[in-house]
Image 1: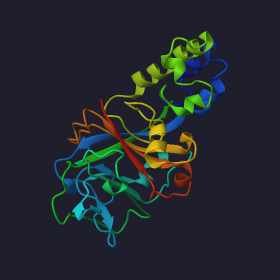
Image 2: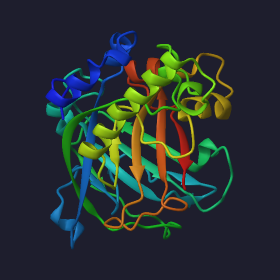
Image 3: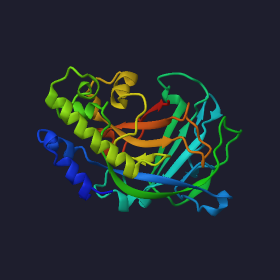
Length: 280
């Protein structure tokens, strides 16, 4: 789906949203959806190919990341050049690689930063297929990835909506002014339409707004990291859903979310990413 989708534009023009339409349009953010396909043998995937599971392809001077001396489970790698057709505003680099690692074997919360890692390297050439010195606590089968571009809007429990005058209370508390309640109802129709058209599980994505399960992820970023700025300084980098194809299960049919500060994303600095897990 794109921003000029006829039904989407029709819903945006509803009278109940007249006072909020400009703000809502500003929150129609591009997202890159990922679809996984199991491969029988990882050798089918060239070095540097985008994938979920298997073993990471790393630069020769980069070891497999560890925690307490043990290899962190490898989740996925993204060849950024693959994203260029789906990222017209160039929010991500269009060269190099991102690789994601996480060990969910201990139920600590917030998730300590040493239990996950995001690696960024400038080229997808000259890589080697790494093998760990010992078996990680979790291994996932290799899955090839394909990408499609779409648009997203914030869920009702989002700090982004509060910034345009549609607070969470408008969606969940009947004592709110009637005008706000009507706007909230019309907005939920927008969300329902986008969800019906685009959000077939598993919901893997880069950028855009999250498909959150247990409340405002932006507020969680602030609480977890003791960040002193506004919650809207944070941006979704990568959402990885429960996926039977990749034999991934996060809690009880949940998802994990890698978040990054907007300034770090603009600076291409992936060293301070924060990870959140939500589940049913």
